[in-house]
Amino acid sequence: MAIEEKKEWKLQDFEIGKFLGEGKFGKVYLAREIESGFPVALKVIFKEKLDKYQFWEHLTREIVIQSSLQHPNVLRLFAWFHDETRIFLVLEYAANGELYKLLRSVGHFTEKRAATYVASLARALAYCHEKHVIHRDIKPENLLLDLDGRLKIADFGWAVQSNAKRHTMCGTIDYLAPEMVEKKAHDHGVDNWTLGILCYEFLYGMPPFEAADQYDTLRRIMKVDLHFPSTHYVSSEAKDLICKLLVKESSKRLSLKQILRHPWIMNNAEPS
Ligand SMILES: Cn1ncc2ncnc(NCCc3cnc(NC(=O)Nc4cccc(C(F)(F)F)c4)s3)c21
Image (tube, rainbow, N blue to C red; front, side, top):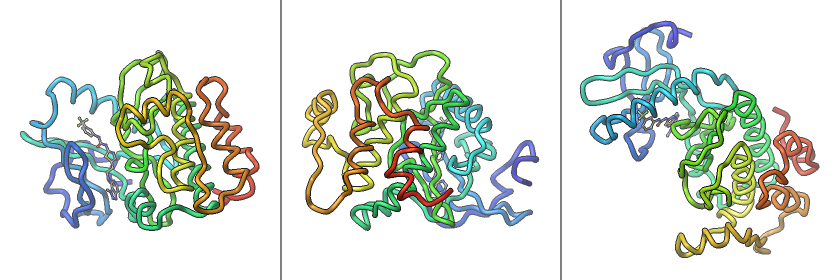
């Protein structure tokens, strides 16, 4: 694709369109590469917002990781460039936007939609883990939907190559696995735990260990204090999958391959 061949891009190569969203480091706009007319999402990051040394490491790690990943459920980072004050990331455009906005607007997803998203996530994470990449920050805000409604994992800013066990604290606390709360070494298993959190949130509209304050949330995570509200019907197969993912001992959680073979996924997920 045209976007990748060209070595150095500059802002003048793009015409900027509508505002798409805002992250902690900067805004995202729809943009069009003028020559090819190709639509992209352009993330603008202000350098002064970044700790100088941290960001080169962060950026290079993200680019190395992203350019090694080519999967239908992983958002592409085509290129990047910078000027004296800003860094620009040229990203695949996900026309149906942020998954969490859809979740907030409908309250909770149907079991078919939830199972389809869980299956897409499991396939994308299985692919990432084969490439020794742990995302570590899978949360609804980092999940996007493309024109066909296909789920895309975005923002590998927190991802790492998983050759060594990781210790750094990162991500939103609702999605933290127990071993990360205890600052123990962690591995692929954290993404599997997070899949259980997300599956629950897709079906009930809020994460399972949500609490008034952060300390209570951490306590509930450590206790795996899991309850299923009876506000609306959720199948026992769905609850079975969640119970087999939200397991404190990371080695006892269902593997990504086992998730894809779970009856609830087999009976509800749309074929990819
Ligand atoms: C909202 N929205 N709607 C549609 C749509 N389509 C595509 N993308 C969207 N949003 C952007 C999603 C992201 C993907 N990858 C990211 N990566 C990142 O933000 N990396 C990053 C952060 C901070 C600092 C650094 C640096 F420089 F220090 F390295 C790097 S953000 C869309």
